[in-house]
Picture 1 (cartoon, rainbow, N blue to C red):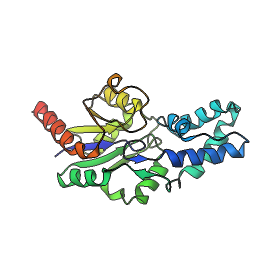
Picture 2 (tube, rainbow, N blue to C red):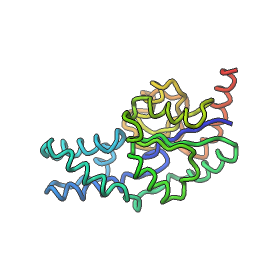
Picture 3 (cartoon, rainbow, N blue to C red):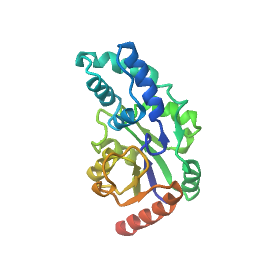
Picture 4 (cartoon, one colour):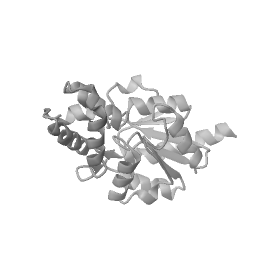
Length: 222
């Protein structure tokens, strides 16, 4: 038994359509052209504030509008769940990990309120013993503090962090924790350029990866 901590957007859920729609609603308020889905997806990964800053830069809006646009975006983002989908196999994998006795957590740069909203939407709240959002602490990924705090909140011990992006890979590396890369998320860089212990594109493969990784960590600890 051990700990598995997941990123959220691009890892467990494909939330880009909801993020894109919320962002486009805000852009329309300021007379700016909408984003298409690939553009919006490219802005995801470093939290809502950075996403809004990227929107502003891409549409050449005044930088001074950042606080206004961020507030407008967050107002819509908290309930932006209806276009979001779980990646195939996620529910079965969470069931399998829980059945194997593993403790599960979330460490994401998504703000905590919309994180908890989407977990409620998919009836996943009770699956995770700790949830750290991008605003839970003063620091966010790739600073290792949220991941280390989540690990500590879950009791410490053998752990695997599962994510999809450059930010997640850097976070795990800086925290000195093993990382499994989900290859079908929002990653921009080539797989072989990112530090990772495991890579997978099908969630059916994850329980075996977790078992092997945690067994190795337990053996090293002994």
